[in-house]
Image (tube, rainbow, N blue to C red; front, side, top):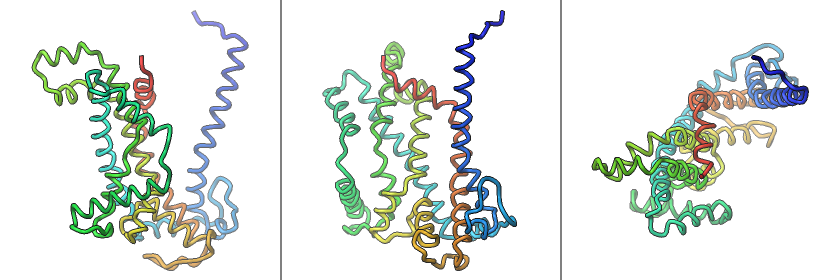
Length: 313
């Protein structure tokens, strides 16, 4: 039998759906605006005539510029490298750390957990963090290049190794591992499983949702990150190591109304603000494609993974 909906419940649903539609529209509008600016005429972009749909004569020069820009694709490959290798690296040490912290037999477990959570409450600040990255870069240069000059190594590896620590993600994984029944681990030990086998054959398969969610968090942060990547690579003069977000920021700063200056890039001289702005939006669209493609496949794990790792019984 169909349940009769109360008036209060109906009103609540109408209001909830209204705000949900508004929120969805606010989320999708920037993407539509970027696409419209990418294909609109340069005059329409220059005069801020775009509201929703492409305005003026449609053009694909901005997309062609991006396709022909070797610097853009080099930075794009840098971002793919940092995102892929960085996510794997972050997952490896996060899983190992979370597995260790989830064990009650770990000596000083409460102290280690406190130090982990303490970093979520208090931050050392921007300057100490920058100095820490510089010191890490010099150590890496000493090990791999035999010098103390950061510019002697490819700083993409510094971005991967030194900028992946994220305590909240480790806490999510730790809580998820703590939710695995201890009887399963005991059965695996009776069958002669080693510590590594228990981790890879028991804990990881039973925490796939949380691991997929944490991988998504790491991947998006690596893909969108630009501030520290810019500060570290620019300090060493390694423009060729720039991720795509850093390159886009530099392009916008040099070629649009932010400074009124123009620069010569790979393909042609960007001598028009409307043209440069349309190209910048084209870069934004190209930079969003991998996340838009990958996200739907991981979304099904998102809510489940956060719930499993975010609640401790």
